[in-house]
Image (cartoon, rainbow, N blue to C red):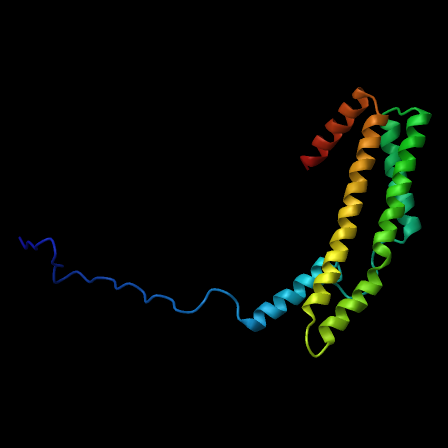
Length: 172
C-alpha cells in the first residue's frame, strides 16, 4: 500500500492548476460605454424603431378606450352619474397622454442632433432625459389622482368587482 504524507500528492494523481487571475476590467470599454449610453438615451426617450408612427391615431385610441371603459361600466352596472364622472376622467387622461406624446418628433430631432454632432453633449442629453422624466412623472401623478376620483365614484361593491377583474386578468 502506497501511503503519502498529508502534504504530498501521490505520483499517479495529477493536480489541476488554478486559472490565472483575470487582470482586465469587467466593465465595457469606452466605445461600449458610448454605444450603451446612446442606446439608453434613445430608449428612455422612447425614440427607438424606424421613426415612423405606428401607434393608433388619437381618434382611434379614444374610440378603443371609450369602448373598453363603457364595457367595464356596463359590467359594473354604473349609474348615469358614475358613467359621466368616469368618462370625464378618461377624457382628461387621454388628452394629457396626447400632450405628452405630442412632442415625440421634436424629441427625436433633438436626440439625433446630439448623436450626429462631432462631440456628444452630455448636459443637453441629460436635460432631454430629465424633461421627459418630469413630464412622465407629472402624468403618473395625474393618473393616481384619476384613480382616486374613480375610486370615490364607485361603490364598495363595484370597487370589489374591479379588484376581482384585475386579479383575474393578472393571472393570464
